[in-house]
Length: 335
Image 1: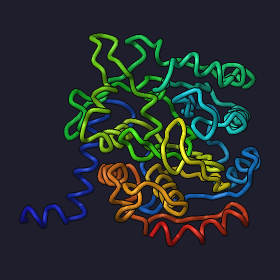
Image 2: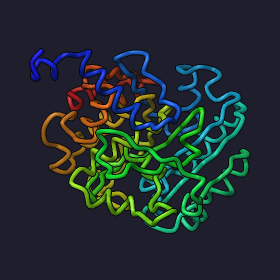
Image 3: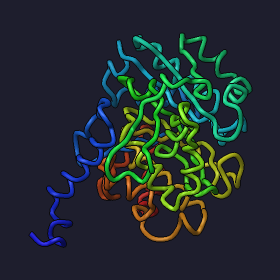
Image 4: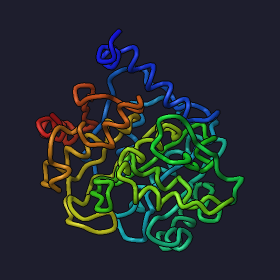
């Protein structure tokens, strides 16, 4: 087989993606494999996140969180209000929904990139809100060496791998809620694939290595963001796109109001739809140019087998009439 034919052969490509992902996991539990080469993104025009989750529940296993160690990744990169950070009503609804399923453990962990994490969480009222539902809150700034798991493997652009919070690495179910945001510091957009950056250590507690300086100084920043998901589970993602930033970001920017919630079990699919929404409203030249899957975050994640490989593999479904209308309106921007 020639080198060119080798690159095109689907079995060879799939085998290489699997080897990269397994190598990166370094002995950790693997992400759940996608059951189908297609992925669904659900859309709702409902403004109340509790009603959205009620409708979404009918599309998911009834025992999704029951008896499991559940880790929650919200978006508290800064203390700025939604859509820069998770909206209080969305976090409240999500924790209430998960707690009602009686998980063995409900745990929210966070590291803020633009502020002291403990202060950010306090200002957002997270500890008080989480306490209503028996949810533990972990400030990752204060986590010692035992709280991190090293992720290394061939093919990663991280020079010495990265450290992922143990609470996510060992969770049996990871649920995240992200926002619809542009990112002016090199990531280009910050949604489901970028949100786990807040689960990676800023410094190595053993020798002080600065992972975030490496990330933000690297020409491979967007690929490195995608590579975090070789070790980060995506069992359910809820994107709050009632509002978003189409320029600027992540803490402030030009506001748009799509009035939507999106949900998926595939971070690549939901991010592709998020990019389509931003394109519909008009966004940065970098995010508008070329096919959606030419965006480096999406291309690298697809290469690693983290999610779908093309827009053709994304199925849009409305959870209500407004969601169905939005799906029809977005298809031309997705394609």
